[in-house]
Image 1 (cartoon, one colour):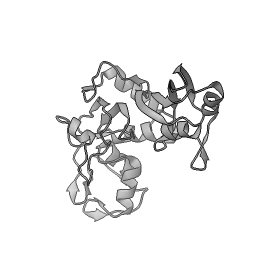
Image 2 (cartoon, rainbow, N blue to C red):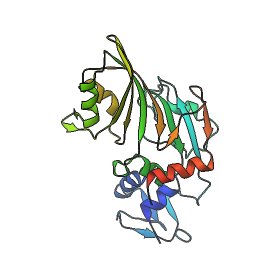
Image 3 (cartoon, rainbow, N blue to C red):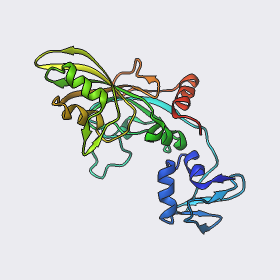
Image 4 (cartoon, rainbow, N blue to C red):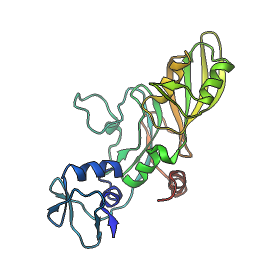
Length: 240
């Protein structure tokens, strides 16, 4: 027996959190009966599960890719305003494959794509403290006191960020380049952190996520992950 939300995540339907929402909204049925109990367990070999009236198929092959997202693309699969999104860069991948986590429109760099909903959930949930590293160009000279504040955590929207790893590569009165590593997943966190210490971001690129580094991909290019890279992702996400 397996929990219904874990079953849906494993089939690439949604993350566990999103699956819980589908269940509570009455959109999931088991053997023709709508279920709304989040504790529901099923026999994945015998029970028939449907979402919005469509049967969820058996476990297909999990897919894991790396994409170098260019600036100017939204990380979404469905934009009502028809702006450019990473969906345009995912041709050839199964429709169940989705981006893992956030990378805002003006940022670029490493994005993981997968239909393994359970792994995607664990890679993005703050509980698992998965590391993300960025190279950032900012306005002004980032001095040691500012770097120290970032390392200790700064207040963003009334809540203190977790300590970050910060290394300043270049600095001048005009602008600085630094590397920032965090393990939270708050919206626009790195941009907001640097704004809080008086250094607005000019450019931001994610170069590492969950132990994987962006390697030899031009902007807009993608490639499948190797088996060792998939194992690294699973290790970074912690035990199931």
